Each structure stands twice: as C-alpha cells, then as structure tokens.
Image 1 (cartoon, rainbow, N blue to C red):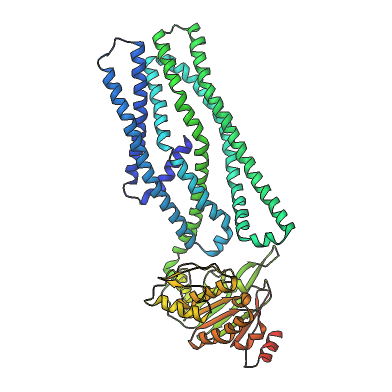
Image 2 (cartoon, one colour):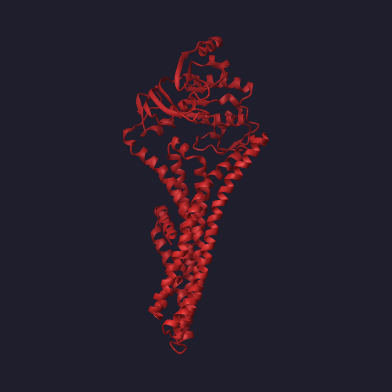
Length: 564
C-alpha cells in the first residue's frame, strides 16, 4: 500500500498542470472503491441468503442485481479515467524531463551521464505506465478487503478481532521478506544504468568491435557481467516476492483452519456465523492474491518514479539556481569585442585521473578575425571552446561581450551569437529552428557549394538523408551553421575527416569567404599547412595560452611562429 500511495502522490505532482486532474484522481479512487464495495455486497448478499434463507427474500434479488450492474460500470469508469490521466501525465513527465535536460548546464549533464538519462526517459517511464494501469484493480480489491472485514465485524466482532490477530501476525511475517525484495529491486535498477551504457556502446561502436576480436570478446564479457549482475538482483527480488506471495496465499488457509478447527474448542460459535466467515474468507483469496502479485510491479514502479523525480529535481535545481541569478543579466548587442578576463575552469585531461586548471585566460576576439586555436591533446582546447560559446560558465574570471558582462541572466542570448560544429557533432534530419522564407533554396545552394547536391535533397526544411560518411555529415553540419548566419563561427577539428581536396576548399575558400562576410571564425586545427590563412594563432598548452601571434602571408612564417 505504501507504494500505491507513493505512485498516486507522484501522479498528482506530475499531473498538476492538467485541468481537473485532482478531481480525476478523486473520481478514480471513488469509482475503484465503489466497484470493490459492489463486489463485497454481492458476496454478503449470497452469504445472507445461504445462512438466513427467509430474511429479506424479496429485497435480496434486487439488491444483488444492482450490485451486479454497479461492479462493471464503476470498474470501467475508474480504468477509463486513469488511462486518460496517466497518458497525459506521462506526456507531461517526458516533456518536463526533456525541458529540464535542455535547460540544465552542460557540465551537470556530463556528470549525470547519458546512460542515466536514457534509462529514465525509456525504461522508468514505461514501468510507471504499466504499473499505473493496475491502480483501479488495486483500489477495487483493497476496498473488497476492507469492506469484507467490516461485514465480518458485523457478523461477529469477537471473531473478527481473533481472526485479525492472526492476519496481523501473517502480514508482519509477509512484510519482512517483501522489504528484502525491495532492496534487491533497488540494486537491480541501479545496475540497469550499466546495462544501458553497454547497449549504447554496442550500437555506437559496432564497427570498432567487429574490427578487433579481443576487444569484442572483452566487451561481450563486460556485457555478460553487467547483465548477470542485473539479472541476479532482479531474480533474487522476484524469488523473494514469489515466496512471500506463496506464504500470503497459504496464510488464508491457516486462518481458516484455526477458525474452523481451533476456535470452536475454546468458545461457542454459531454455525451460521462460522459459515459466513468461511465463505467470505474464501472469497478474499482472489483479492489477496491480486494484491500480492502486483506488489513487485508496484515496487519497480515506485523505484522508477523515485529515479525519475530525483533526476528531474536535480536538473531543475540547476535551472532554478540559474534562474535565481537572472536579474543580473541584460540584453546583449548584436556584436562587438569578445573578452575573456582571467577566466578559469577545471577540466580533466585525457588518460589522466586528476583535474587540471584551465587559465587564467585573457583573450580578446574582434569582429572579422580568423583565429586558429592549436595545441596538443588534453591541452584544454575543447574546454576553452565550450567556455567561449557559453556552454560552460567560468569558475573564475569574467567574459565580456560588446562591453557587457556575460552572466547566467544573458548566457542563453550570448550563445545565440555562435554557430558551432563540434568534433562530436550531431546532424538533425530536419532544419529545426530555421524558418527563412527561401530556406529550401538557400539550403540547396549550400549543398551545391559543399558538393552534396547529388546525395542529399531538401524539401520543406527536411533533409532526404543523413546516412552519409563522417566527412559528408560534417558538411551537412557546416551547412546548418551557414544557414544560422550568426556573427561568430567555431569549428572544432572540422577538417579532420575531409579528403585533401575538400580540406583545401575549407581552408582556402570557405573560411576566407566567412571572413569577408564580417564573421569572426575560430578554428581548432592541427593542419599546420594552412596556418597562414589565419589572422592569429593561439597556442594552448597545459591549460594556458602559450602564445598568441599574428600571422603574415607566408606559410613558412606561420609554421615558424607556431613552432616557437
């Protein structure tokens, strides 16, 4: 019952934005309860007719017919209301999580990890849907149980008290293994995150696994280990639940045996009362079995609801913290100097456990500049790029844009000045957020310029395919950046996957063209053959700007400057 109340409370919190949701929950509970009372009424009428044949002979058939009609009507009403409310609530839940993820700082999302986000958005929400569909049935059988006990109390308060003592003892012995089962289910849900992580690795790393037998064997071993751990905890919980349910089923017969064979030896009991208790207790076996069989489902749903809420609250806490500081921000001009003043940020270097400090960084970028950012792996280039575009907030120092300070109040607007192609980019099949009047024609022009017109068509802002090579998909990402037409462009190792011909096109044609249009372009690159194209070269090492040099027209001069 605790898990049922927890789920109902969760449903109320999630569905608070649905009109009349609280009234719907009340009606769901009332309809389920009435259907259970109708069930009990039919059993009581049958018992009354058997134990006292002559009493109320004219009324009992009509009362029985009314109960028969009320049972399906109110049961259907309860299920219909819950299905409608549940589906709307889960849509709100998924949208709430989606908005929370998109609104949370990137650094926090990286700490949470993709497996936890995927598990919450897929498995947990599905578990909640499946469990909530059983709530009307649970309410009905709970009301049957309670109303039957009330009827038994009407037959004989003393016997009900004696029988209740046995029931309480049985419930205590039932709850002890159930608590242990919940412990195993909680552990299995935590292990499910590892299973999701392996599934993600399997789908994204199939080619790499196929190319290396020992890696593939090690991966299969790791998957088997995680899946086995998950299966072991899940199996333990299910077995303990099955054992507890079997004991709960046998408990009814134990109570019946004590009532029929033991109690009459110590006190007088009317045969009609004993028959009534026997019939009702036998009828209670069905509702008790339903309640016990749904406890594992409720337990999993309660754990899923807890995980979803905790994840949503942690993400929304980050959003609230950001919103609390919004009063300090203001609107930003379209463009101007971009200055980093003493900016610092901790980051983790590749293949090393310790965190390193990026900065302090003092940097000024001007409109129309073409800047190359160079440095070895782990030097902090990507971290600096995320700070520049506003995905990371500085831990120390300040960023100023067009003489205005960038803070949590205007960071979102600040990011709107950048068009970025990351090294781990993603291409959407639809040109989302772009609604220019001649969007299709403009996109086709860029597709021709990027030599993709034979592979990709665009219609109503939808690309015909994104199933291309890595280099070609990067060109699609570049096309999207062009269509955004923002004042600052950042390319993180964009040319790394291009063939020599198109790499030359990128450096010698596309970048100068952006510069001529007055765009500021920042390029993270290792292609020293093209360093002479840049106006400036920033060299980063161990999180510090080692050099910031202006480049002449000679490739040899550019190479000599960066080699210093």
